[in-house]
Image 1 (spheres, rainbow, N blue to C red):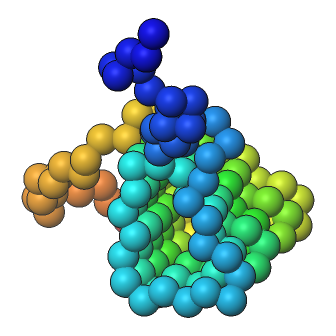
Image 2: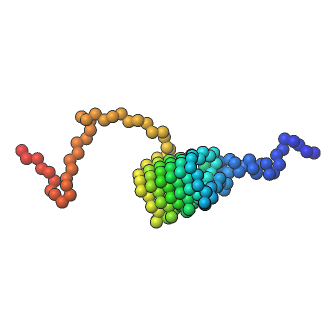
Image 3: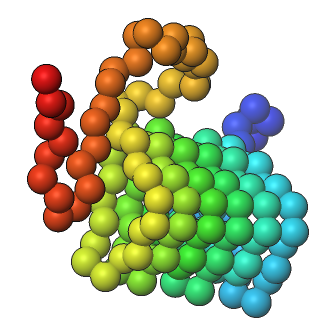
Length: 160
């Protein structure tokens, strides 16, 4: 009648909520909470407090309108409504909401920026993020020659 190998509905629900792919479940840092250090998570994170450190997450990172992160974010997906001062490395999609203020570089698969969002930095979009590989140093003879023209002046002309 009672099979010890079966899990109770509560235990099954608890196990499902800890998986990174569990829809709608987030580790939540509420407004008024300050953390100094790094956060590493296999699940999703919603951040409405203040963090001085990095977030490394296998799931989705949400920085709420009152959230403030001073550090880098590495994750699968990011939804930013608050302030981020640091670089973002996001495998899939970064969404900058109209209340967001991001200062830093973004490397991502896809980027969505709503009107009103503030973004100061560079963005590189790739289908799949690969670890950075060092590039060989360019030799001076192989470097392209560049001529510049001051604004408002005619182009330089070589006389023969």
